[in-house]
Length: 72
Image (cartoon, rainbow, N blue to C red; front, top):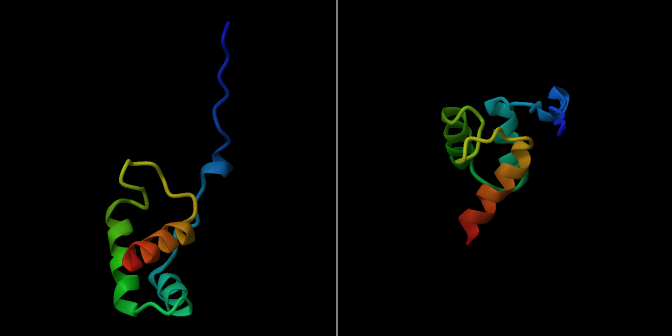
């Protein structure tokens, strides 16, 4: 008999940022407030999930990818 173990819910929790946290992070990385707002409202509209519907575990990682995509 195959047994599956459900992942612990605390491992799936994400600290959803406020807009000021996102603005601060983008500012530290030398990106504009406008770009921070675009990032924030984009992911807010997706319910802080990626394009595949998977919940984001680390919004700063997603923000770094967003910034990298702006440069490339």
